Length: 252
Image (cartoon, helix red, strand yellow):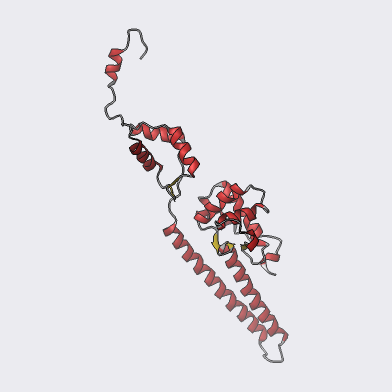
């Protein structure tokens, strides 16, 4: 039976829970990913979602997929779009032309098909037993084992290569700061900066610098301070001067 005809999704629980990429995903993106896998499980081409010509309304392919998925998922397009961006950034999903792909599902389906071919070959040999080859039942076992070993080896090698690539290529995920963190950083460095204004500005831009995703919000603060030229407080007034100048009876 083809994987898409099975009433359940082959989900490798241990792999899912220990996957380094998924561990970096937000809860929102993880939920969207599970829903997408369910759709891919029922797709005509297993492990993919096809974007048809009449569904290409935007020049950005990712937006087209988000709008298509919004018809099938219980989330608004904006939520789906932000989740897709995160899943694609971490290579959990990929876009290949007009297809949204999940490599593990595609690989599992290929393995299943190879096993089915080996099983059919063995069954045909068994049905012809006594007419062409006297030991066709043994041929069936050999053919099935050979096809399975080959498919498993290919799958294992791809997993190893993918893991090596992942460890080398995935950059550290940017985490946007809170307003309190911005205030604390400015206090530590004697910067004069409106934390609310800084946060709202980059929040509205999606935390990008130019056209590139922001890598360090601390560096962005330093550039902000430098560009606006507010003088940092290098020589704060000593506490004893403040104390001596206070009116008598004033609370310190």
